[in-house]
Image (cartoon, rainbow, N blue to C red):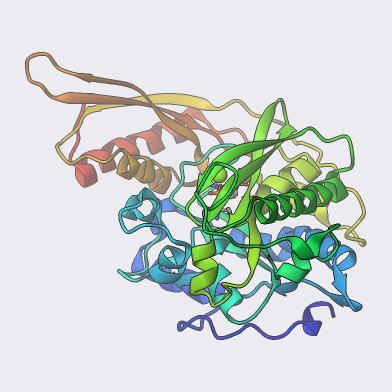
Length: 413
Ligand code: FA5
Ligand code: MG
């Protein structure tokens, strides 16, 4: 019902396909196949767990931020993840030669389309359509290395809020004397076009909004910290980290939107903030799920724990038995042009879901032959059951063979 109250998405995309179609399309092209993603599990997760997390966050924004009785933020959940490089990179001011555009870090569909690596791909189009406050939720794709808190497919929620001069200063004492813009200098606290008052107020509102959000989700006793960071589309920029499982876990990036982005989107008379949060990370903290890979489990004992009648009912994940990983090493001489990311991909492709971790632990150049050797440690692991040595040996052998055949390495096995 809440969703129906919002206007339908503006026509921001030329490819009109559902996530599933894109996924199947990309799979046929072999684009995503390398990361060996479990698509059925993916769709399953979006339906079962994704929606629950979404409701909690969305309800918070609907309940807390209203304007004349209507929700302030419009929610967009169904924008296609197939985006143009223009939307994903250019529109958010990511320079042409920036590393985040690299083929080895993204899932390109062709030269001008890729599966979005962040929901920021939609910022410009939605601002351009005239919105002042919106949330975008969706699946995002990165050829990231896999570990406890990273997976190549995950979900983000983007939030944007713009302020006119009146909206920002209206409630400030003496606010009518203040200005949003000046011709100044870029310093750590602000952009050249912003007055210090405008930048500080936007930053304050941003941080307050996000702290209120995590406190609603997790209660008051949470340990959080702000870390300064850099994004091409915000300045100043911050990341929020939450203490979880004995370490700081980054849950979101945010900042004061670059005025140039707003200018190009036709909103040069406004200032604004934006954030992008990792939904799995928040769900890990909320439910006490220690490993992001568990979201891909189809195990009944896992999934059934999240079936509750009321979305606000607290759930604490009950871990099932933890097995120890089986470790195997692999060493080889690398050919020229060898990319480490290709080998890591190959391990994930061949080893599918039994690879817990793969990491380089040694590299050296032979003094005579001048050949370079790489050694990697692979940890084999299955969440739901114990792997046998025979199974692991057979997969490890397949990885060795594939590395020789596909990457041209010279095995030292
Ligand atoms: C971004 O993606 C920016 N677009 C966020 C942003 C939006 C900044 C608007 C400013 C304004 P980053 O790459 O840090 O930033 O990702 C944001 C969040 O996604 C992270 O904090 C983390 O919670 C989550 N995340 C990133 N990579 C992964 C991954 N591989 N697996 C799971 N979660 C991830
Ligand atoms: Mg980050």
